[in-house]
Length: 134
Length: 57
Image (cartoon, rainbow over all chains, first blue to last red; front, top):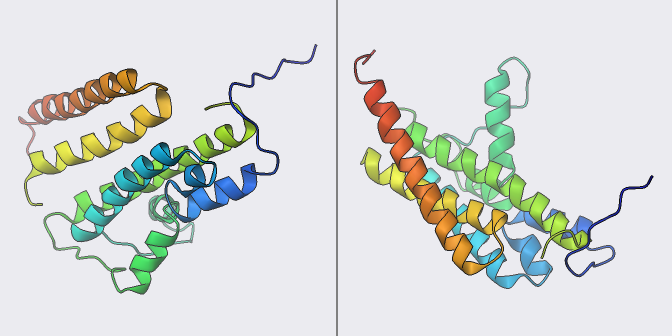
């Protein structure tokens, strides 16, 4: 028996992929694209603040893509989930952070958690686009 | 932001706001959920901190 699909919101055909892409590029942009302005602005403010504060607290933004250090790989993937702000900060010279700073690990935590929260936001944008959430 | 407690509170507030927006649909339940989550973050961090107090290294 086919499972019944629950639709609680308006479905927008073809909007799911651009919404997810925008949501990855800039936290909250997927929801703004879908017309959920309030939600999008809150995500942009909260996740953006986590990232900016993390960079201010001397977080390291190095990109580690090898399997020789799996934890560093996971850390980089989490930070990359922030999209444009992550790559922009690297381009502006905030890549290295300051490992001797007392807030270095706090900064890492702020930026990594910001990226992981943005993964949840991307999934939420997908649910909104296909009509599973409002 | 060199204060550990201030960093904890700021982190808790920002993460809780995102969780509340994702997991609740109306304003009142979002506010209640966010306040409870902030409290849980801060309280659990303080409790775990004290549990680790006898083991500084």
